[in-house]
Image (tube, rainbow, N blue to C red; front, side, top):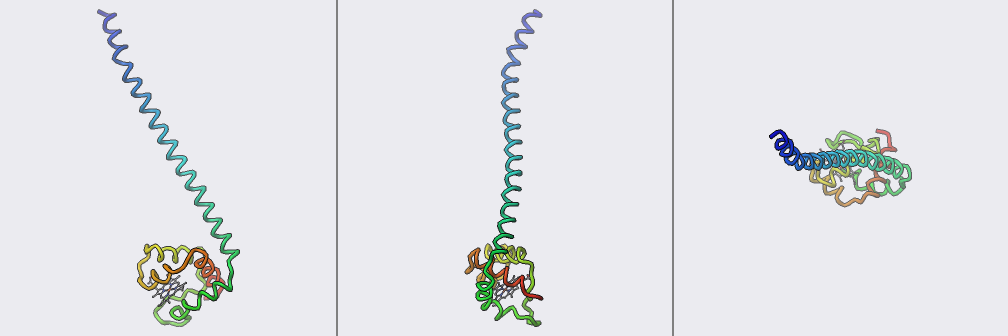
Length: 134
Ligand code: HEC
């Protein structure tokens, strides 16, 4: 009787243990996956950040000034009701312009303006406008 119970116990327990081991393995795998995703995301984000700063430093101010021609018809210095954009910090400028381009920022005119610009042009404009005093 005692023997019978213990055999039953052993027999019944095995699939559960196997199942638990599989479950742990998948939980641990998921945890590592998530950790790697976070770590890698942080690394590639930091790299993107450094790249952007680097690209801004190397940007062609003359090209930025040239492209700015069509911006300053609206963005003048004095109070036109349109925000003044001289002196906006360059990386912030890039983030704002890309947000208009992706339509995350809501303004039809600026969505259209930014929609015509590629990354290099946005970076040149950021370098140029950030170099001006506000
Ligand atoms: C036809 C007028 C017009 C033109 C041309 C124009 N903008 Fe704008 N821009 C606006 C208006 C209006 C806003 C405010 C939008 C809002 O409230 O979101 C704005 C907002 C911005 C902002 C955000 C400013 C802030 O303080 O939030 C930036 C940066 C900007 N424009 C850059 C540019 C650049 C660069 C160009 C040229 C490629 C350009 N704009 C051309 C009208 C214009």
